[in-house]
Length: 261
Length: 309
Image 1 (cartoon, rainbow over the protein chains, first blue to last red):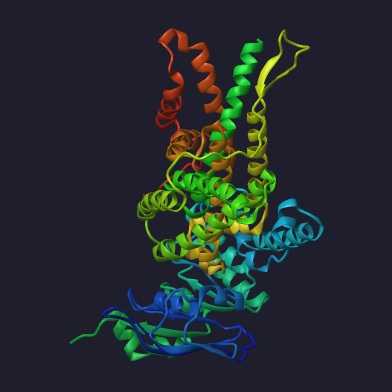
Image 2: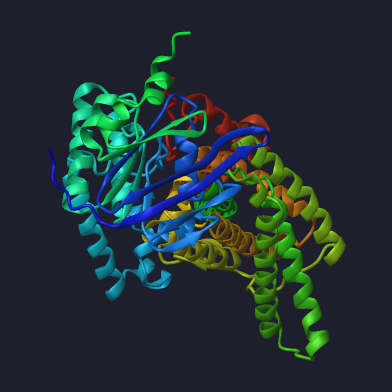
């Protein structure tokens, strides 16, 4: 098995509850994520996996509980703050800037890092130009890494689905995140595309030491690449541990296969 | 030949001014995906503010110099448009994040009526003058090449130059800066833009401010040509065919669309008019736009939208 240096807890979710009116999406969920690990969140449809990610990402505000990120505790996350602290995400249903080229899409991930002022950027004067070139180099590295060199200038809306998923990942990587939240990165892909995506995720984790939190339905993939797994069902946590523990957990088997009465 | 050139030039000048108004539509659409029905009302509002402040300032401060008064009025009107942009974001758009485009369109329709009413309540509903000291007298150029030269309206030349400068500045802003990229990102996907740390609220204020400045400049130019009055809101209607022709998502499209329509109107009026009894200028743009909708609905430079089913 793979050997990765597992660090301290970087993200700690404590007693999160979230409801929309009368619908309880999440009830008292706690789990933590360690530095450099690949942490999977699994569960049947409607279990609250995406809601969990949206709470971490600041899209939803949970009614109860708190989230500790690198020692700082928050009751409400705010999207911009989260992005600034180094959390990036991809989306279950693609959310790319369709009219923009692959290059611009990935470049937009570096927007927070561009510091020179507007006028200098518009006129491409000295420091602003150097800064642009530096960011562009980073973006080129990501494009090489994801093997989408040929599509640099193509408007994203015209790319096939599998490649769009890569661009989505590329934009998140451009933020140089410490924690990467992936919402079903392999949904709707064929076997070959899934293998590529797995390779990218493992490489990112390996080369940059990025912590990955991942939602996925393909059990083979989850059990293969993740270090620890959280299982949700109907908004409650029913299992948590290394893949083998989870596989043998009675509640988990029931949730997935149903019970005989 | 000289007459043809004269007509052509006149058309280009008029076209530049159409482009300016069309640009207001394109900017907001590109940057927020909203078709801003209120652009015409904003032109009127800005022009009214500018005209009235230029009138009031000498009375308040005792400064008699018309240039100073005009500059001060322009700056104050700019500030007023900034406040308007901020209020629109605060009171309307903030509550409509992630909503359908049609919902946002209806909201701008509401803003239109509100701003038309508010503008006339605050600044009065008479016909006012903006006099920025543009020279009115025509000049003759290229006299060595053609007998009698070509008649050019100086005012039009200056107006076109101002419009061109504004367009150039905005293109740089949109294409070359990180804020420009953020604006385009927000137009495509609110949620994704938020996830990479783009603050939606600030972006919207910026967009509406820019649209406000464009409205102010178009209001100033059109106002000094036609007088500041309610009919300025219909200037926006003249810009609709331009937007359809050039494409709703393209800044260069707005410019070229404006020029085509300006030139087309003038040339067809002069050269086709006699055969059909004249009056072509009034409907030419709309018919052209209609043809474009049939043949190339995304306009000359717009993005082709393909929906996968």
